[in-house]
Length: 229
Image: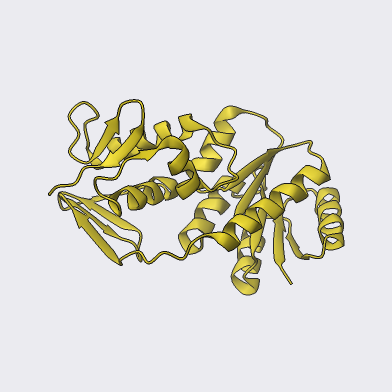
């Protein structure tokens, strides 16, 4: 049975979500705050996490960051604040989808199903443990990056974006293709999400958009990692 973990401090919403999702055939675990949710996550290994942004103690953003250090499990974030900034922050730290309160239960269930389908069909492509091109070195198992021997701290989606580009040097990817590869087929993000992540990724690795060493903009198409050969 597919197992879901709901982390939300609103007792009524936890009960409502738990009932509705169990009616759909899912096993549901619930937690009222971040530390409890993380402990349940490590103990039970759920297939998907539904995570509220506004939690007592550490907020949902910090819980998501900690989840992403340990797992690629799909994360659906919930918030009462319908702001673009919250959505961008959530996506940048590794959330897979974002739903603003109030929402219909039918929409939430549809998004849960979409995330589970996407995760099930995600190709198990073999990525080398270490990838090196033109002065960039990526350790995919430790999620570490070095640019010209200097350690670089990347956010989860920035790391995933770099891994996808550097794994295909010289190949041009459209923004839509990058959304599919890095964020997923059913993701609600748009092309600005890709552009924003490319911009911050370049800044972190010390690349110049005007005279790129590594990540090159192909005008009217998308982006590619320059082939040093």
